[in-house]
Length: 594
Ligand code: PEP
Ligand code: MG
Image 1: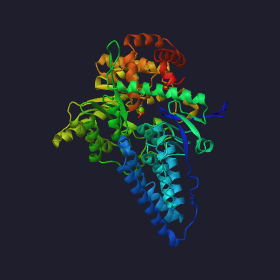
Image 2: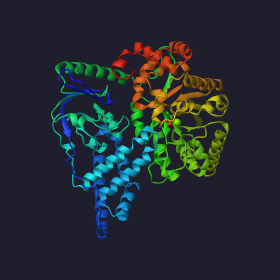
Image 3: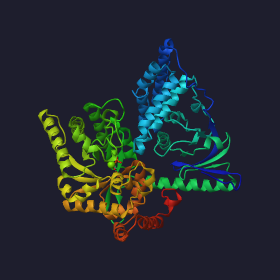
Image 4: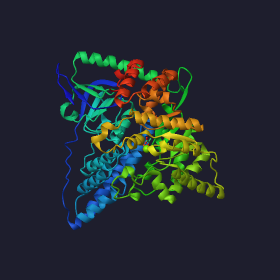
């Protein structure tokens, strides 16, 4: 979006990535000059040469990624898994084999074949209704882009050579590009494309430099040398600002910095309300590499380890050893804090080519998660064995996803029991007291909560799915996206019902959907009585700070009023007013939006 200039300046709005502000000169990265010869047929006798050219390009890029990984600056070393995933993509069958196949069978040049593979992968990713995973297509695009540049003879590695204090303006920056950035010189960056969960955004956060992505027109509106203000807290970029704007943003920068350090200073304190009520705050992770960040942000454990990633790489299913090593490392790093490992949630929106369940007209209601695992017990057992073996190295809690009723839970626990017997027989150690819980994310499970509570050690409420299923909203359907509403009174009642059932049975209840990390939900969840909130690690410091400021008696009193409201709009208005009053700085710093 562009707003009109009053003073010759111009303002663009995009996706805020890292809440800091920088003012400096634009350095435009123009890759449009790279000439790539896309479509051309090759003669039969040239096919082998074309395949060899492609293989050579893969090897070159492989070397580049490996060297970037080895020379990664310390503070982004935690993110080296991004380059690992790029290396995996390079040799992934869907990219590598398909490109070679297309060159050989269709007699086309390497660039064209590569583009075709990318399009096919794009179609597969489009089907995925998981923002994080579907955004991973940008990784494939970054790898392909690097390969295309290598094939065209353009090395284009000018980023590492920047030796002036600048703000990078680019159509897109791959994570490999960001790794090359010398942050002694590069003060921030803005891009036309990208979203909140793109790896470029993740890297900006790791590098802790202001960035705004998804600006759409930045490269066409900004000229090299323009003065820019990048406000990574509000997602705003001002081109050629006047003095007033510069003073305003300098002031805002100072305030933001002070606020961030005040939050960070206390992120290792417990989340205890002023009247002494404790809530556990844990992190959600998708990869082993995120564990250290979870700890650094003050996470008191891992409340949700989504284990699908190792199954979604398109390299065949991981074996028990690979899974065991991965889980053991997570658990050892976190020990003695707990790690809740969720068993496979494949199917529906998250699928692997090995288990593509075709022809489901309604995949969200299809053979996903525990349903799939019960249908394929051999695949399930491999994961259960790995989890149990890792449980000997720390504090694992096991969670079954998408449980709809007691029979499913009984069936899942029976398979778990069989695996435990096998381990006993083989004298392989595991934690015999390992807690077993379930995700509460299907309305039928909520209705049966009091029955289910007698069969598990804990509940973890998955509000992302619970909202989808309770409000009958297909999350891939943008026409009903506006109805995706955590403040719907029905959702709040369901959460309360689960908590009451857990209380009565004397078990703990966690909440690990997006609601847990939403500043607007903190007071409600405190009032309802959730024992553990599990969220994106970066949200932890702020949520902890808020918990420490809200007396639980007040949250309970508010909840009573909220439960008397009949629409989501009323609930939202109430909570917005209350949160703004209690934490006026949050709105101003871009942490809550109306
Ligand atoms: C949920 O459904 O709320 C949840 C945490 O699981 P996922 O987002 O992985 O489905
Ligand atoms: Mg879920």
